[in-house]
Amino acid sequence: MADQSASNTRLIRLQREAGLSGEELARKVNAAGREMGVSLRYSRASVSQWRSGTRPRPPVPGLIAEVLSRSLGRSITAADAGFPQGGGAVSSGDDPLDSLDALARLDRTGGASPEDHGHSEHVFTLHGLVAPAWHPRTVSPAPHGRGPHPMRIGQSEIDAADEMLAVFSKAEALHGASRVAPLLRDYLQRTMAFWLRCPAGADTRRRLLRTAAHLAYLCGFAYFDLEEHGLAQRFYRISLLLAAEGDDAWGYAVALRAMSVQAFHLGHHGHALDLSSAAVHTAPRETDRVSKAFFHGQVAVTQAQQGGREAALRSLRSAERHLEAATSRPGPLAYHWAALAHQRAVVRGLLGDRRGATSDFVNAVRWRPASERRSTALLYARLAEHQLSGGELEQAAVNWHRFLDIYPSIRSGRARSALAVLRARVRPHAAHTSGQYLLARATELWRLPARDL
Image 1 (cartoon, rainbow, N blue to C red):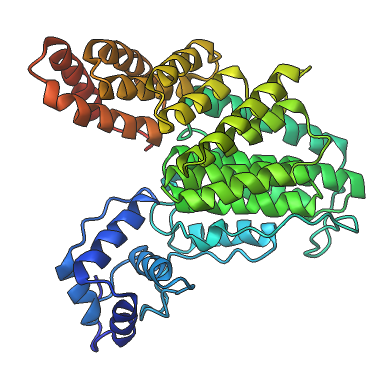
Image 2: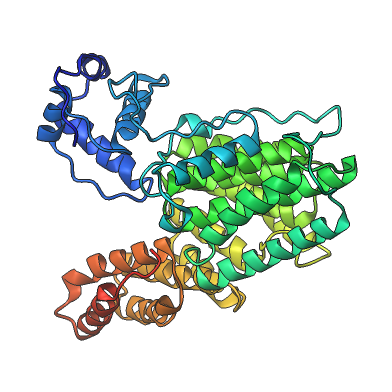
């Protein structure tokens, strides 16, 4: 921490206005840190130091500002809270290429590098969950001119971008995000951003923007998998902006759904419901059936969490009907009956149908394609957690061992967290033979270096 000579009167005033005690502020800052993949252990004494003029290192000033923003219901910056140049924010604005440039500049000027996955700067914000309503473009997108460029973009660049999207998608699903995220981020910031600033015909540019939007969506999901939610949120926002510029309502809806999934995961359930509903309403009428199921399935999850039993079941039935009517697979999304079974398990669990949730979890694991190794591992872990909650230790142990069989081959923040949950949940059962063996195996894997994480 860096010392300052005077008390932080701005922080004192805002903390008082928010009605937060020192202990409450510290606890909320620690929780906000977890949203960006950072483990913090601040206490009431830490808050006293901040109030007396001590400035914590980034990203903490940005986290303090976010906590105050949520408590007060208005946007508070780090500077507002008495931390000038406090870090934690990357200007996004409405230009996706400027947003990519801002992230790259942060990498070069002391922020986290792509290889570090951004742990030091990027704060997840509730304000970032606010997305403008979709509006079709009335004119074709123009190049982002930054001086003369020696090349004109054509079909070869579109083909290359589409091929890279397929490669990144397959690698991320098979191996987890850690080995893919920095490469994908670099490809977006260097290659795609350069091409989007080069001359191109209107149709060529529109197609390139749409592929770039999906690459940004995939990059956001990769950082979501790494549990670095501030950075994931920024790439989801970039995906949203690229889709808007490319007049791609489908891509815009995909980004909204991704933001909903993230909000739900972090416990912001009202925002998650709003975003999932917006995705359904944004998707064009001619959207393929698989995509419609993809959107409606997420709405069902968010409705169930908010207590809308009948609405959730209706949305599930809509997703099922769309998937049954789908005539072509695979589509542009990796969504299938296994993914819908997982969402159905979550919905039924939230609605109190334990037996139905168990059946759906089993089907979700059974139907997962072998190429989706990371998702399969996480499903085994979720099924085991569900079974242990119902007192089924032996069956839970079987599925946790299946999770551990896959775990060493993937690099995933969510898998690492699932391993932590396993150890915590099984520890009370360590006297039982199956619990003892499972805990020993999990602890051995936990102690291995978390490479790339």
